[in-house]
Figure 1 (cartoon, rainbow, N blue to C red):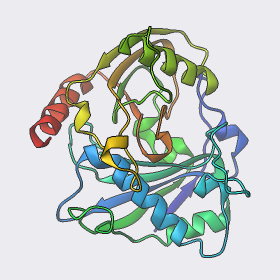
Figure 2 (figure 1 turned 90 degrees about the vertical axis):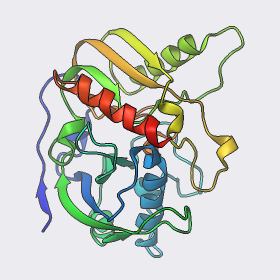
Figure 3 (figure 1 turned 90 degrees about the horizontal axis):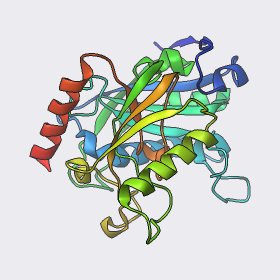
Figure 4 (figure 1 turned 180 degrees about the vertical axis):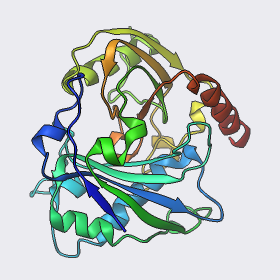
Length: 275
């Protein structure tokens, strides 16, 4: 049974889709059940497969929100309010994906919600021979705060769930650190965040194990990416998802609580072990 509940967020700075689409479903959450749950470094693969599965349920109906394409077939990349397909572990200490979600800041229509609610299985052997078929159970549907509470905050400190890939190539006169910081700050401003960023810690060790290319792309097309720890001057509301492939699960952040640091280190160690 799917529970639908829409609530608005507090006045803490963050995204405004809860007001814009207060009477519409903004996010849908699914529990992943499998004898061999996918690893968190395969988040982009799982998210991309989720998009394929979702669009297959639309039949001849076109959805700019779910496809990310305008009526003329061109990608919508200017406002980023169409669907984000996310795959992550609900427990930050876990290294295996148990949750997939569709988050659309502009809101989902009733036909779009219906199409998503029909999803009960996610298969991917066509894309990856090690992709075990997963059972999907729709758990929550409604506001993003209700459907994805672990990604919302508010919080001052945020850590990467999946690595951040700057959307453009690095200039010759820039260091990698400068390049990452510049683009993340730009992404935050474009998304409407005005709160000052106090620090951005860039970490590459262990994050190269994450898939950084889409299903139809080759591994040589993988984006360079890094894990980040970001600290704001004041608490902000998520979800925070930025950079290249943001609509396919890359560049996702989680608010950091007191006990998260050790759990995060444990999960990254597991990822390195399986890399």
